Length: 270
Image 1 (tube, one colour):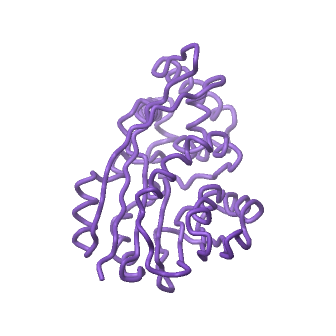
Image 2 (tube, rainbow, N blue to C red):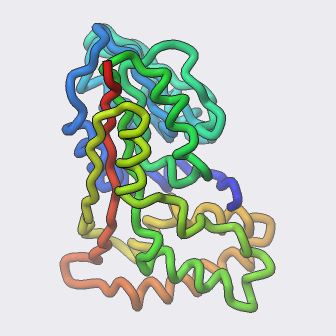
C-alpha cells in the first residue's frame, strides 16, 4: 500500500458525516480513572474530532498524534492550545505503527486510522500496557472494503491500463479484522471489550459527491501514486467517477452512500 499524501481541505469537505462515528464512539466510553485525564488520539488528522475530546473531558491534557505533516499543520493552526475547561490540546508527529505510550494514559482513542496501519492488532498489547488500570482503548474504523466504493476502485486498478502503476497501491481487503477477532484479542489482553458495527446512510449532495468523499480518504493512495502524471491521474479519476455514478445513482434529495463502520471500546482491568 502506498503511503498517501493528505489534503486537509478535501478531507474536511465532509467533516460532519465523518465526525458522526466519532461522537457515537465517545458516547460509549465510560468514566476515565484520571482527574484530570491524560488522552492520546492516534491518527488525529486535522484535529477537528480531537477537539471533541476536550468538550467531553474539559480538564484533560490531550495530544493528537499523526504522521501526515499536512494534517498536523492544520491541527496546530486551528485547534492547539489551552481549552475552555482548563485543559490543553497539543499535536505531535508519530506513526501508529511504532508509537508506544511514554507515560500512563487514561484514554487512547483512534478514529478512522487503524485501517491504514498494517498489523495494527499487534500494537494493541503495547497500547493497553500504556493505560492506567481502568483506562480505555477505543477506536472506530471503516469496515466496508467489500462495498462498491472500494471494490470498483480495486477492479479498475487491476485492469491492463492501470495495473502497472497501481498494483499493491490500494488498501488491502483484509486491512480491518472481524468484530469477533477484535473482541477476542482485546479480551485476551485483560480488557472488558464492547465491539459493534453500524451502517450509516449518508445523504451527500453536489456533483459526483461519492467521488468527492473518497478523494479525501480511500482514493488518496492512487492519487499519490499518479501524482507525477496528471494526465494519467485525471484519466483514472474520470473512469472511476463513471463507475461510481452507476453504482450510487443520485435522487432528487441527493446521493445515498451506505457506509459500514466497526467500533470497539476496551476497558483495562484493575
